[in-house]
Length: 63
Image (tube, rainbow, N blue to C red; front, side, top):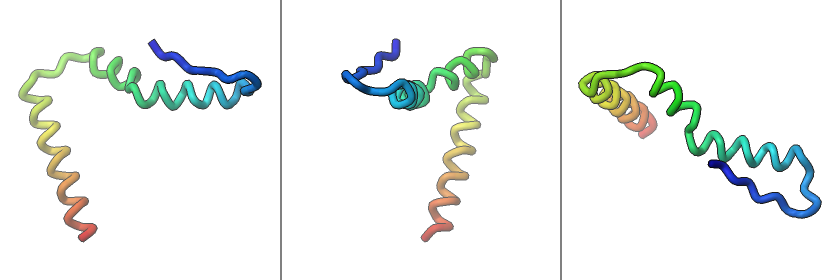
């Protein structure tokens, strides 16, 4: 459950913005999409490995 502390005198836009930040940080939407479809553990491992390879190539290209 997401709880947003609202101070006295805060406007609605600022409170809503902080709620959206927390919502994105927690990753609720990502979890919902992941639970929608079952992926085999081997497929998940392969995707993680490919993602790590791409990330490493990006880091190497910066150097």
